Image (cartoon, rainbow, N blue to C red; front, side):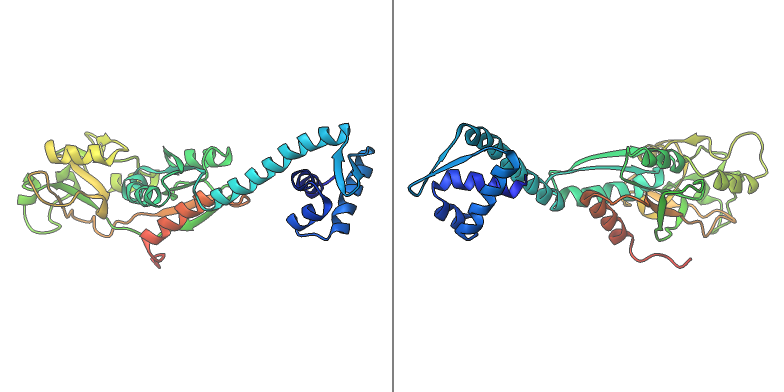
Amino acid sequence: MQLRQLAHLVALAEQGSFGRAADAVHLSQPALSRSVDSLEEDLGARLVDRVYGQVRFTAAGELVLARARELVADADLVKRDVALLQGLAIGNLNVGMGPFAASMLGRPVLSQLMQRHPQLAVQVDLADANVLAERLHRREIDLFIADTRDLKKQPGLAMKRLPNVPVSFFVAAGHPLLEKGSSNSVTLDQAMDFPVGSPQLPAGVNAHFDKQVKRSDRAVFNVVCDDLGTLFHLAATAQAVVLAPDFTVPATGGQSSLVRLPLKKMSGMQTHYSLVMPANRTLSPAALAFSGLVQEMMGAPSKR
């Protein structure tokens, strides 16, 4: 028994004759008759009595017809929903992001995605790369963006490197450190006279910063917060020094403007982001759209 045979039976009931039903389903009348005969043979029961060019459904035929209507309607709904899913009129997206990635890419990418596909259901999880990798393996998220320098090598993960983005220290305009001299004359030790904030950083990056200071009275970053908006607020209101990707910093203007603070031996810092996807699963249309938007906004991969 096949779905098309049930669809032929439904057409026969709706049209009332084999000739009209055959035209409706774009078959010849003998072909439609053979389809109904084959269905009757598969079920072992007479479904239709042919009387003087008319069709009358038997008791078995009425029972099968009722179920056939439901199955054909469900099949039509499946086709419709798949078409809607492919066109992103419906669907779900569960995406993970590291803290820097969320601040740098999360807002603009999600804004574009929702403007283009307002009916999508979207959930964003913030965590470090290894936690996000576990969630990806458990199918709790579709893909994620994060700094992958600390990501343990795991089978089943496909990584696509994104272009590097400059990272700098920022302070509020008029910060005392800006008055200490020329560019790159302020040291990280001097910056530690003030609160120094960043999101969670890879262990190797933290170790690099630890090697650059002589002080041992505190950690380099004494404020660790994965919400860059909060860190920027501290920079604007509490003279904090904040580490952030360059184009996440709020636009200049007003008393809360943030400016780059050049620190000695701290030039050339960059992000190391990757799109991480399951290597053995087909991405959903929503995940493909999100991935495409990320790469569109980031531009061509960096050679560095």
